[in-house]
Length: 196
Ligand code: VGL
Ligand code: ZN
Image (cartoon, rainbow, N blue to C red; front, side, top):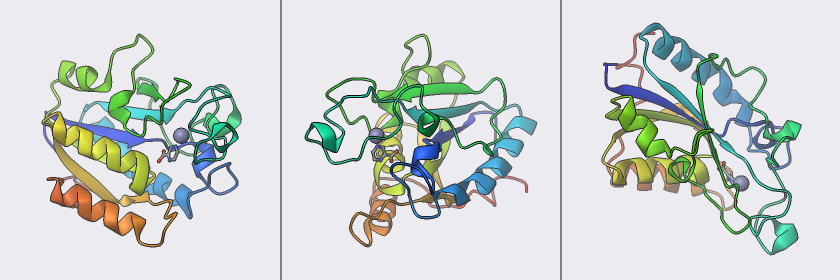
């Protein structure tokens, strides 16, 4: 890790974990890995961002309104809360996305903080050049966040031990990882770059 690194935790919310409305298999197993990264980034005084899916009750993103997904991560519900064991520091920056009635917003870069500042601006404001990305789900929000991060000209390290896939089709997660690597992401688990 170095002074220009930031940790970006994608959508580690109850609804994407076992028991939630749109559960990712073993989704909750990313929590322990992410908590280790959080500790390391905190100790190095490096910035940490957490994105969240933050949908209205009615949106074209949901199968109740013509979309693909069962309703999930509705604003203010328990399902939209971060996983209770995710050890988010108090000064974490929360980036919300998917608030519109007509958008999927899979990418954290479509999200904003409480004052409406987009993620890319928040990252640049704190001098970040390299992003370490983990969370849920590999084949949707992690993938789109990583690809947009690269388009925004950040270096991106995919935290392979801290992601899990929806796998609507078997192999979607593996294909998403391949796509991220092709686009320029570093597949390192981050372990050699982050002291344990
Ligand atoms: C996500 C499907 C629908 C995700 C969000 O966070 O990966 N997937 N909404
Ligand atoms: Zn969603």
